[in-house]
Image (cartoon, rainbow, N blue to C red; front, side, top):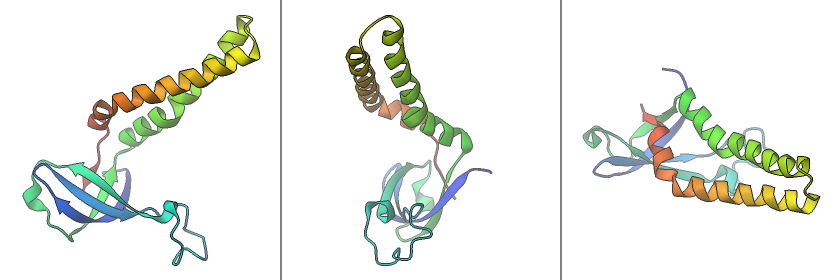
Length: 135
């Protein structure tokens, strides 16, 4: 089973999901003040993970969250890749058609705003496609 993983602790067990708390330390690895710092990048974060059988889990249990490579790439593409392509297209297509720079800039910003609104509205469908496993 390949993919990235993160260690956490179960803080709540629901009917169809468990809540796992973990510390985001990716930005703090080499920092000398990481043990006393309270910045958002090192903050404790929670994730609600849907599971088939919640009877296997209990509060306080240490677990690993595993994100398969396919799910990771889907999330990265939706958050960064697609908006980049759309923004560049919305910027350069109007310029190529003879529109002014201000029109192209507004088109790029409007396209980006529309994309993130659409992403927000479709977040449940996207969440269904992104798989996070508990080990």
